[in-house]
Length: 260
Image (cartoon, rainbow, N blue to C red; front, side, top):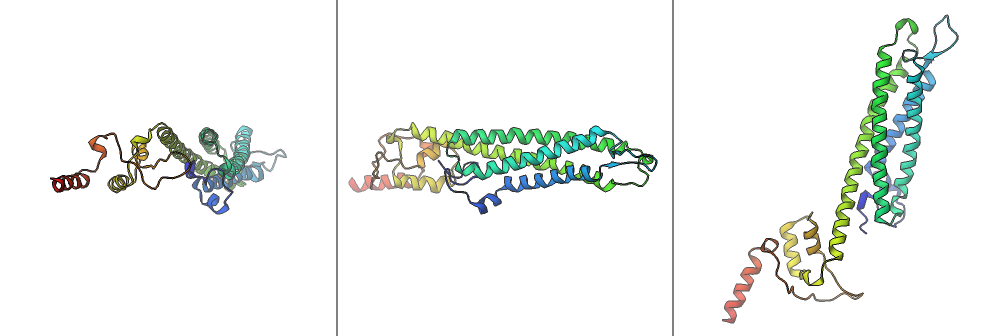
């Protein structure tokens, strides 16, 4: 299996810390992890205030305890989820099965979409309750910065988790293409494989290939454990759209004229 599938290292390879840190999903998970700490930390430390004539503390968001509980719960669970998927990303190069890798990425898509939705709901909820707060409930404006920080980083968390969805979809697309290419190559008879010279000319014409059929034609195929030094000519004709137009035709015409 190609080691580049899902943006991870070689399947079954050892853990590479530098490659792990450079992965975009790792950076986004670390950001989401930090944002979740800021949200629930701000609410826990300064999210409860009381007036001078009161002894019991109330939630700073319109005295709605549900708002504070929601922010703390979502923040803590998102914090744990980031740690879990960071561990999965670190273990990902050890997974050699294509199906297991695909399941891991599909779970990443579902979890990231779930947390992006929860952070969107939390941002709207906290913003609404903060706007509805009465000044007489907190005349000294205690904890105002903490409340605004919780709202701000809830908003940022929406985009970090949404970006993780986008990256996971890209990784899923890569493995889907790889599965199609592997399936096509496994079922292609050896007689359809092109000689080395023709493959090189097609590579120069197509450049970076993206079609499974092009990838199949440009991949050398050998039977047995020993590699052949020369490849047999192609016995079956291919469609004209797959062949380079002029170089081979000009060469064949020159050969025919010489024989004549």
